[in-house]
Figure 1 (cartoon, rainbow, N blue to C red):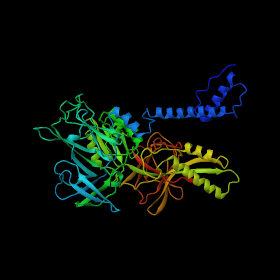
Figure 2: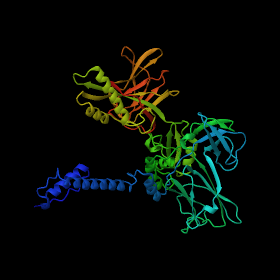
Figure 3: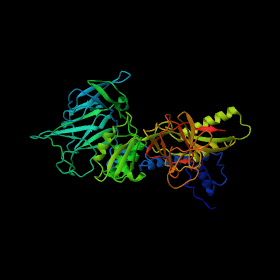
Figure 4: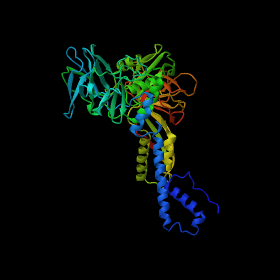
Length: 542
């Protein structure tokens, strides 16, 4: 009798069990056995479970070997270590205050939260600092660690897991020499033998300070040296939102930026880019990686970096950073000053205030016969939930927003195939921002269609008008057309449009802020890189 080996491609328990049963049935030794009702079925179950458990374990083990699929913090820490990236722990909140006179390093301020909780803040800048002063939240640890350093391995293990590693500084006093203080940073160069530097490595929940070793990576610590370490034990996100500080004349900026354990998906995104950039900012990916690595931002969707070559007309030699100017984000001057230290001389970094658009998608739905009004309302509520599940934080301003109606349509028709006959895209309505002094510009970066369609209705000098797209499409900027209530075209310069790119300029002829109603050439809304977008709820018309 021909024996067929078990199918090794099966990974589900039932498939494994069936494969083993078929294999044994083909063995001459087991001819006539009742595999479904005999004791051998128990043995097959055990073999199938053992195979299933091992396959599951092997899959988890293999996933932890690669940065893209790893899930455990310990695995990710190990995988990014060869890239020269240290996965941080907690990040302390920072605030900016005005004080009387100058403030010495490690001067303490007390922050009082709205719920009455008390937090310590410190000025970490060396020397006398004048207003405004940036203060950092945390419990100060300031101690001599000379006797606790492993001189053979040139290593000291920090005993606290909640340390903000960006606040670590080490002071080494050698016999007969002046103290030398070094603040930790990611070191991406080959130091000299006598450079006073140190390295931070993560070991589980704790961090290790590594000094110079036998491989000459910096100056080694000697038995006669006195070593002092200072750092802050952070409260993470609990330190955010504090607006009251003892010893402060006034608060320039409330505390913000405190974070708990880092988002591992952000670590996966940023570590390879930090390694490829080698602490330089050349490409826009380098800029984004450095801004996240050094805790200027925690989420790549909260800011955008783009080159002058992406603008129309192009602005060569410029790199632009854009983000919402709110208290949880850093001052633009801080970001630009930081980038100037990283970018080549030929590039000039600039901050750009982002445009903000609220987008409302209009759809049309046709129900099958027999669907009552109550059920229609329930279906439309569920469609809203599907829409919100597709676009996380849909009602918050984010960069790189995009909308693909076909994804939503497919979900709707699958979920309600017996009740919904059709579900189609209608149009997109954009809430217009308050006009500038003379005009408002929209860079929608999506081709427009519906020649001659009305894009907004506005009141000018107490009269109602409709503004429409040009009746014909040309590959150049065209004037918008304006009509009165009698549908007569009016000779009035209301603005311009470039249909191929979705650029619209509206001259300021009204005081209110009407909605701009446009129909994209495609039901896919491409990301508008220079603008913050949030979605309103779907409009569903039956």
